[in-house]
Image (cartoon, rainbow, N blue to C red):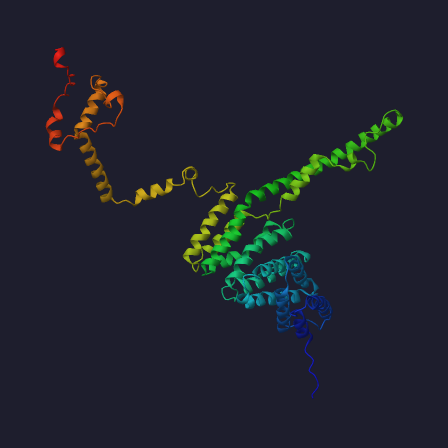
Length: 456
């Protein structure tokens, strides 16, 4: 029997990461982190592309085997933070590149019950990639390398990324960028970070990618414009208030010192401040609590130079090789951004009258669809019906009654038998010929009551 061949450490770790027992998988994840730190610290060390593909295959099935949402979230956070274990930027980018390649390769085999956990893993890996970029001070060169990597592996038409990966990445990009760098990034840096989306939106032949970028990136910027402007104004007000508070604090300190000296001289006066440990001292004022609640509820928003974004989009969309449908879609966004740059917020596409009467627009469209011959037929029919109603004897009688104020001699209701009981008699309808003959005659006189022969 020959000697047993020892497998490389990457394959051994991948086999343990995909094990059936959770204890084995957790132990393999901890060993993998130590192995990454130890190997990337050496100058001659590092990982190859194939080695990291094997590692990511083990991590993929480690996430596949994990049940229970809380444990999945904890494992996803642990896996995504492995990017910080690499000691060089090149190794970090290679780790991220092999992750997206693994997701593109394994995506068609993921069933719908496991989609949520991998959606969460993609979000966490993107967040940690942006966090690693933040620790480097948003270096321009490192930013360009990361954006080129993401464009090549996900957004580019020649990439192998499925539609699900592309759509989810476009949806979460601005959200994760806001969480990581909303308080630090300037408008120029944000424009640089969304640059690949401008380029792909003008070049792509895929209508789904164009719609997702226009809706998930540019329309989101337009929707968040009021919040961004409000946040910018609040920051300016806070700076002014902080300067005023510094001046007022100096004056208040001198006044407090004078009051404390006066209170110390009067022994009968109780201290205004409650004793330590009391409920009144521990409770905070309601105004301060409300301010803290407002700060927690208000989420940060990315700042953009809307004119610069519109100019960049116009530069891409106005090229000769831009498809017509892309140019048409981007010009709509450009007009909204130009309006924001001028201080005008875009109005809703639906007019106000349509909200009051939702069917009004449909009726207008239905009228426009009728041709001239159909309208003539309809008007001809209505004119004939009106003419017939005018020529009928009943209508002439009604008109005469309306003019004369009604004929009191003619009763409007006939008595119903003895005492008004019994079924009502049916009025006899005159024939058509009779109508034509008696149309111009006078009204008949009322019938005389018959009297018995003995009373004559």
